[in-house]
Length: 171
Length: 168
Image (spheres, rainbow over the protein chains, first blue to last red):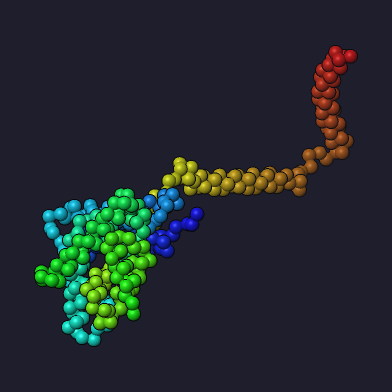
């Protein structure tokens, strides 16, 4: 069995963990705290690394649980994913107006994802952004593959529906 | 360009029937310039653009984590047995013992040397002027020693004899 090294196997997961934590907490500072706590927790369990089937799934599970704990504590304040930092521009549209509009639409989709129930959000994050299989997601979240599929299905349907509605009638 | 395949993929995507590879194809397809997309597909572009991973932690994060996990390693308590704890004392005691032994040995050697030096034959004085008188005295002295010897020898030999006879 492959020996797991913290620097080469676990530390590089930080951005993936961060994105999941951000998707759940909707707060960059809290998400960073969650990733830090996750790393420390994994480090403290280093005696058991060899027994863990997938260190990535294990890390994601810990990260999700810590993020959920954190959001439960801060339940009172309804947060929104703060998009103060400009997302990198993937379009090469020459027209600045077009660019701005496209960015607005992408932001809208992100906000819509943020409004989904946590389970759908996490499933969608892992599937559509991190490219994980249904099986892996099921392991991370601790539900069946079928349930993962249902969550993702609902998430995609909701996003499409709400996106089209908003585009048609405005916010 | 035929977009039937893409349209089909989109439909299957929303039904959750696409594979990971197919979803990757969709994301890659919608990552291109929006202006080049056909009108009917353009509306989906933001949906897939929003799925690009972008949020990332800064560079300092690694160092912070590594410093956090390596600190406890240094302070990690070491269990010291009683033996290990007393080892310096044992060492000190051993050194003292060695020094004492050496000192004693030196002392004894020095004393022996001094004792040997006490016998100074040159300091002896003649006691008799007449050799005949001196000879008599020496004879008497030797006689005394001889008697002493023979007594001890007899005692020894008697015991020896009795033992010898017993054995026989």
